[in-house]
Image (cartoon, rainbow, N blue to C red; front, top):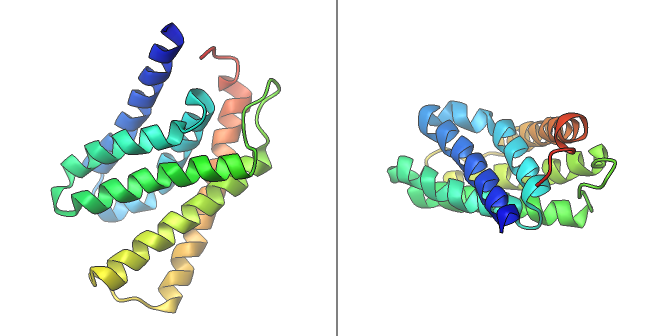
Length: 171
């Protein structure tokens, strides 16, 4: 029972970090800080276990949607989907914590793929469906390039934090 309470606390804490970042940082800048959200989601997978990032994305998405009511449904969907993608790619690349730590390269790949997909998908929805911005191939390439870079750096940071400081914390 205590172990479940600890995992729930960690998921709530990480969801709160996502909410605070989305609430206090205005939208253009908050999208540039996706690496912070990526690190939080990766660490949620390590601490909580299977579907940890999905739980954090679900709760963080609900809280963030309440903060940004104009784009609430999109904020919820993209935050939840990002957590789901992180869990899916962590599973696909077998980037799970072991006694000696996590494989840095696998975590980096999982985060790069999930961040690239969510970055392009959110850009595509806002450009074609909502038509808030104009869709063009150069911008699409730039979004993917920045998303991959953010995912790689976030994956490296999460793996480093886990291997160096966090793997010995009992969950």
